[in-house]
Image 1 (tube, rainbow, N blue to C red):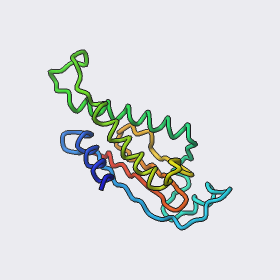
Image 2: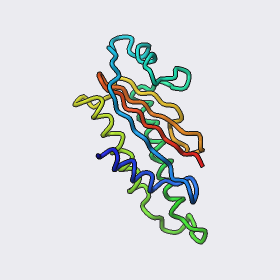
Image 3: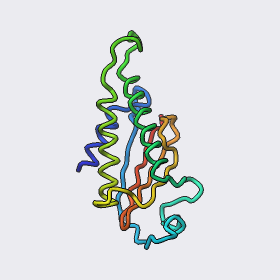
Length: 157
């Protein structure tokens, strides 16, 4: 339920144009793999994983990708709030206080779901992250010992 709440709110805040909201679809499912010392190679055989499209993220790279995505989402939400008569010099609505906490909650909820109490996914992969909202779509994959979470982002116009 919490994941649906977060994805719905993000779609309300983020719009590609007047007609198309950014869509977020999240899938969490068992991967059925034994992930040991060759976890990356093993996971790349998973049924939904396209080897060439995803780059492996270590902890620092994942943190950077998420921070850059948060900033891009806040900027996009702010741009949606501004009308033609507004100026970037005017006091701005608190887009960062709306979008960033929701995006963080989504990621934190998924990490906790797949990684359990450890709080760190075994593996993380991205295709199109950090999000730049250029209409190309993106995926973030978070892998835990038993579950995998996939966030599909549709930012097409």
